Image 1 (cartoon, rainbow, N blue to C red):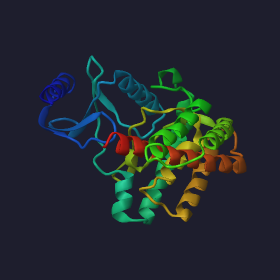
Image 2: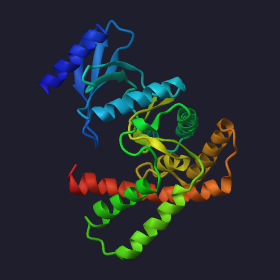
Image 3: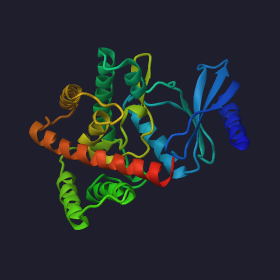
Image 4: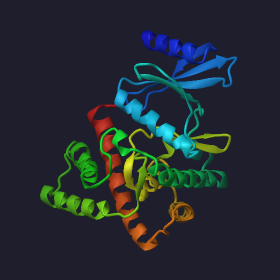
Length: 295
C-alpha cells in the first residue's frame, strides 16, 4: 500500500505540481480496482481521484472511452494524468453521492425524478453520438453484445446462482429457453454503445447534475439494456409509474437524437426481454461475488 501511495504522489507531482494535503483510500467495490481521493491546495481543483489497477487493458479501454465521450460532451470525468505503465490515472472528482444515495436519502421526490430524467437524456445522447466515433476493437472482451454474450450472461446466472444454491431445475429446458431468448434479443435493430452496468451507483450527483463513471465494460449493443439496468435496479425499487414514465421519456430522447424514429411497440417488447436477462445477470453477479467469492 505504501508503494501505491508513493507512486500516486509521484504521478501527481510530476503532472500537476500541486501540494498534496492527504491521500485517502476509498471503500472498494466489487472490482479489484483501488480508488484514492487526493486532497490538494493551490490548484484549479481541491481534490481528484486516483485509480490504481494492474489490469492495463481495462485501464486503456476506460481512458479511450473517456476521450471519445468527452468529444461528445458527455458527463464523464476529465483525465488529468496517467503514469507510464498505465496502472494509475488521476481523474476528476465528482464527490461521494451517487444517484442511488440521493434516492435512498431523499425518497421518490420530484428532484430525484428529474435526476433520473437527466441521466436518461445524457445516456441517450452518449449512446448514439459516441457510437459513430468508437472503435469497438478497443473493448475489454466482446466487441458486441450479441447472441454469445447474451448466452454468457444467462449461463452466469445458471452457474453462479442456480447451481451454487443447488436450486432444482430442468437443465435441458432451461438451455432451450436461453437459446430462444438470446436468438430473439440478438436480432434487435437499435445497436449503439452499451454501458453494460448503467445503474444508480455508477451515476454521481454533484450540484444537481449527473455524471457517469465505471463504463470500461461497455460494448456495442441494444439500447434497451442500459435503460433496463437503471430502471430495474433492485436496490432502487422504483415504482411501476416511475419506470413506465421514465422509459417513455427515454424513447422520446432517442427520437430527438436519432435520424430514424423508434418503432415503439417492437422496442418495448424487446425491452422486456432485456429486463429479464439483466435481472438474471445481476443474480449471477451476486452469486459470484457474494456466494462464491464471499465479498
